[in-house]
Length: 210
Image 1 (cartoon, rainbow, N blue to C red):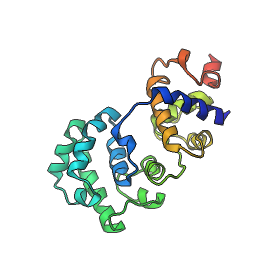
Image 2: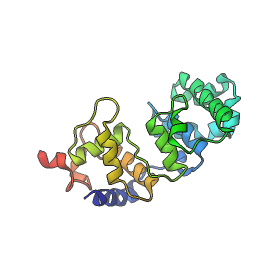
Image 3: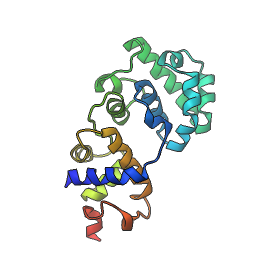
Image 4: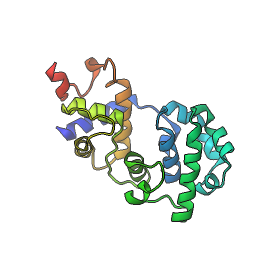
């Protein structure tokens, strides 16, 4: 059943995918920055500053040596003033500890300030092609509903991370994750999910309980 879920989700995504500029890069630096910016904001907002930001700070070295005021100016539309300093500090750590190369190991990534399990796994999956579970609140909601699991409070419970690994395909993890995220916004929404048009309705244990 799990392979069927990923197959139907990917098929749905062919006609329903949302297109953001940051989804088209394999650059670990850009992915790390964008995933940090995506916390507590939307894809539309991050896409709106994407080109301007990386035109001004094209490399991790440029960001590490930037003045906070310049970084703040670049991300001001997102309304995240404190995030500017976080970006600079992470970049400085990469330059000082890893010779300006974004780490390709989970341990090194999570040692960076502000980089937790989810962001580290995004970098590993999107930049380095590793199959990693990518559980945020959106993925957690979909998996818990479809698989009939109880959602965790705050950070997703370990079984949700394991479920992600079981459901996700061996290849195309990037495409699968974006399909899951878009599906969570367009169909399996927090309020008033569109179960009548859901391509996973036949497998959804929560729907079967109703």
